[in-house]
Image (tube, rainbow, N blue to C red; front, side, top):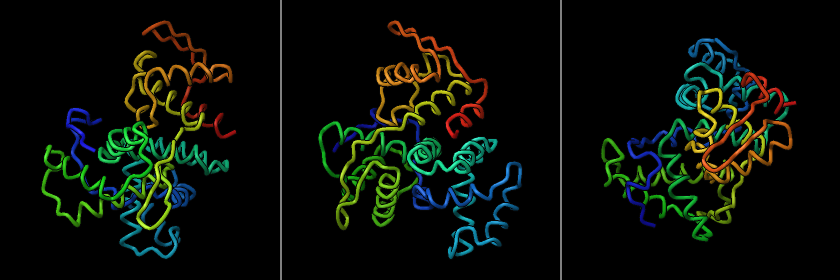
Length: 270
């Protein structure tokens, strides 16, 4: 599957091997959120996770890697708001797809390679009717990315192989793929939960996006949604009382129900 550089989701991106440090890590994220406290210094939190054995039998080195290089980068920067919202969902027992979808949002925002893997490789594969994504497919994607200048330095073939496996595992954990045998993963027709659509829409709104700009935001492409899909989904969710959407051509106007992101999360968790 040939992908030109101009088709990439983030043309100025720089790919890293960060996915090897964390993959989806949904179970570990839940465990960390249960003990995380807003405002606690990262060093103190890391020490507490180690002393309380929050992540089970993981080595001290691995625990520090997960907390500092995955959890903190995805959910604590810049202000811990993402972690606070996810913690609310965990405390109310929302541990399934809604939780996973929101984690995906922040993981992809933090990792250009993961984002492009989903938007540029996975979704076109699904559209083309491909039933599987293999390590070979991803390695070829990485080779092309390297030739297009997306890596700051050369990646050896073993590194590309390791990164490819990490990406496929992450996609499987987030619900895009299903393992059907050793080294074989089938594509799954992934659909975000309605709760995730509500979360993303309000998060973009409170981040300063205009109503019309919001429906065109690139975050929706992670979920396989174009502008028309977003308008259609938000129109449907109007009936459930999340907002009032009016759309006429390129003009979109939304009357928002909630005044803060925490109110939204509380409503989703309730």
